[in-house]
Length: 65
Image (tube, rainbow, N blue to C red):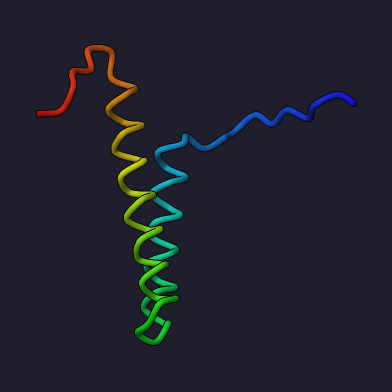
């Protein structure tokens, strides 16, 4: 069975930033508790992934200090 390929039209770092923003907005409407904590954690992870993607895309990337 052949694999399906998709060409992404939006860069990864932008998609991750949008996901983080969406998750934070969703967390604002959620009452305090485990579900809200999970949404905030996932938003933070998406932001960190976007930063790492940006760092890796630089031609002269050096390890962070």
